[in-house]
Length: 144
Image 1 (spheres, rainbow, N blue to C red):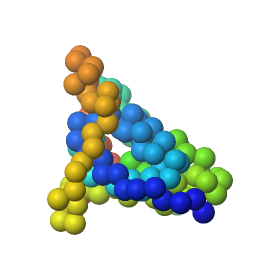
Image 2 (cartoon, rainbow, N blue to C red):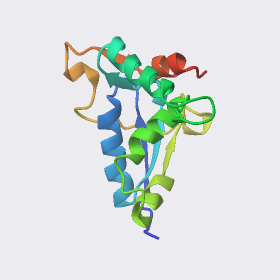
Image 3 (tube, rainbow, N blue to C red):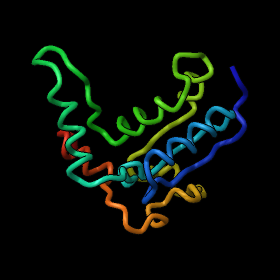
Image 4 (cartoon, helix red, strand yellow):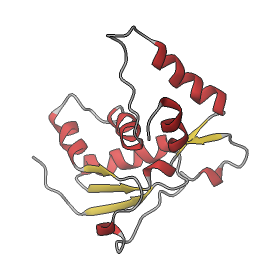
């Protein structure tokens, strides 16, 4: 098992989900323990019609007793995106996944910590982009 270097606290508010996940995956693979807060305020780029259409298609695959399991929490959507960016079938990737924690909002224990933002991953950098928040996706697929 690799040694944990230090702890990083990342604020996901207004950050594109894919770019956030690449940053977190790299840091976790290096050995940092990463805590991501405000995960429900992160952003998926694309028009509402396209993004919701993807999740609608996934929901309709299969039948009553089989099919694809769709995560219905912001944490689940983030973890699914993150696991695809890690070598999750190897021990190194599994250990990196264990070092990442995601929180909806900011927990009381992390209120006094200094939050890092991902440079260049904000939706403000791309001015004419259509986007949907992760919370909107969660509400669409039936989560709370």
